[in-house]
Image (cartoon, rainbow, N blue to C red; front, side, top):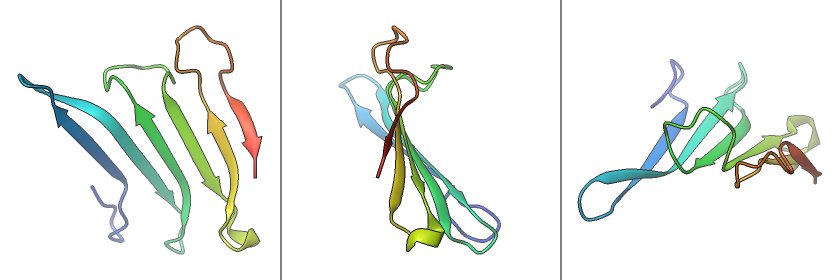
Length: 89
């Protein structure tokens, strides 16, 4: 999907498991008004999930030459441990 400016907003990769197609990975992108990407978020696992299980979020600091500045990793076990852990780059 794309926004009004033609920027990619999300991509869903589906894998055929022999009977149906399962969502294995989804990327969502956010852009600022100057069409610069400010966030890329990857979701793995069930598309029906409403929690952050399996999510990884990457944020880009545009004032710092566009380099990866933060990475958020969310608990992939569903236990709540490490939910929202932050790794600065």
